Length: 150
Image 1 (cartoon, rainbow, N blue to C red):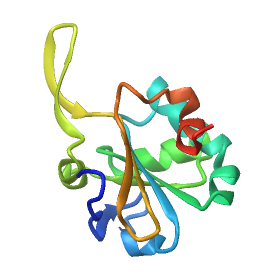
Image 2 (cartoon, helix red, strand yellow; image 1 turned 60 degrees about the vertical axis):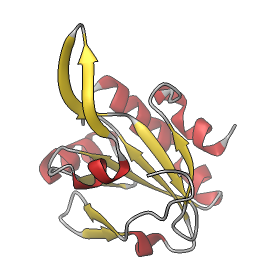
Image 3 (cartoon, rainbow, N blue to C red; image 1 turned 90 degrees about the vertical axis):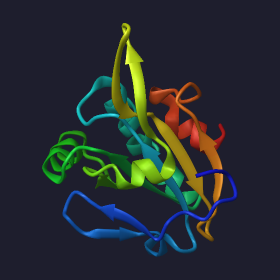
Image 4 (spheres, helix red, strand yellow; image 1 turned 180 degrees about the vertical axis):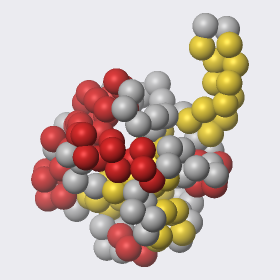
């Protein structure tokens, strides 16, 4: 997916197994953020940055939706532990991640493996991608401020 592309209608299932659609966010800006794994330090910092600034993000017209490959049960624990006020998509088949190009080969300490690239897509009120924040740009502890452009 690139800037100017229309995001897909079906986004996946959330932590409760409910199907989430792009049209659920019609008229709102959507922060669709892909993150590697529940309960890890960077992903927790990123989720908590969005949580702590949630009311300001909503005031500015944003809704938040996180995506990772963990299952619904893992997402429920992550939401409960960190009191997250937004939903998380359980992309266990990597369908959405592959559509958005956020799943691929990574490397750590010379070892190659498949994983999620931390990437955030800002989707406008009409469902068009208007901004993409790539892994090297994202500061997990300040992610909400980056989204708001502060």
